[in-house]
Image (cartoon, rainbow, N blue to C red):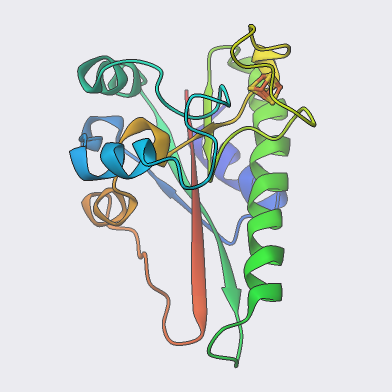
Length: 175
Ligand code: SF4
């Protein structure tokens, strides 16, 4: 499949902005890794979509082993200063979109890596520490790989901030 066709499919899956991502731009942020380790969300070590999975060097080597990638964004807009309903709807659009895209991509690229926001929610309760029940359905957290998303966007010439009253949630697909 051409990258152009994958971009079209990603938009059909509900992403508002889809832009090329060069896997060589992945760099590890110790700050992001340390933030995950504080386990405020409860996923650290409890969900196979979350860290810890390996060392920073191993995580980066895995990400950089892919030839192609896309940054996928869902953008929420609201006239309110804080709009939790819009945040939730935008987050759900992102989660649904990365799930649909992964299913489509896996048919042609069984080793593709889908990276979303937060841990994997495919099962009601993740099996960790027992083995993942559905590895081919697993969505892993982009930040869980130690990635500072603002920097990733900047290094790929992608906007991270779309103006007042907006929020951008980010995902990625690598193949
Ligand atoms: S597919 Fe299920 S067991 Fe595997 S990471 Fe996702 S929630 Fe956990």
